[in-house]
Length: 67
Image (tube, rainbow, N blue to C red; front, side, top):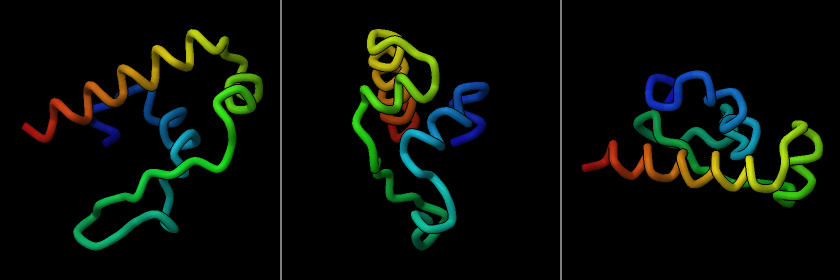
């Protein structure tokens, strides 16, 4: 995921709690969040529109990589 998301990976990692607790077999992660988008945006100094844009981009990148 780091290779695909490049400089956005640390933010993606925080957003989806991508850590050793979410790591499953074969190096696959379970992506889950434990906060609202609004809370996350405020904590990370983003507007809601910026966060929405990043989430959309992350999903497009990850879905494209599975094809």
